[in-house]
Image 1: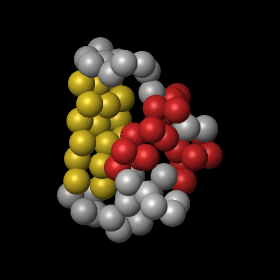
Image 2: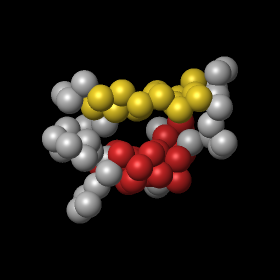
Image 3: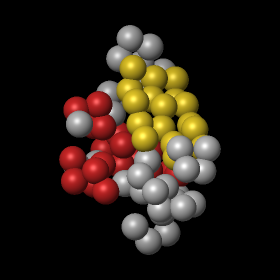
Length: 69
């Protein structure tokens, strides 16, 4: 992805297709992004294990598409 940012990563996790979500990569190093949606707490955690970056979104405004894959 050109001009990839963490905001774009979040957009894809919420609204992307299964192919877009499978191809998502860390904007900093290009490694695969991890993600986990917890329906009980309505929270999404994602980031890059290679870079050590973790982002947590609590009280998500919608169920992210990535929860289906």
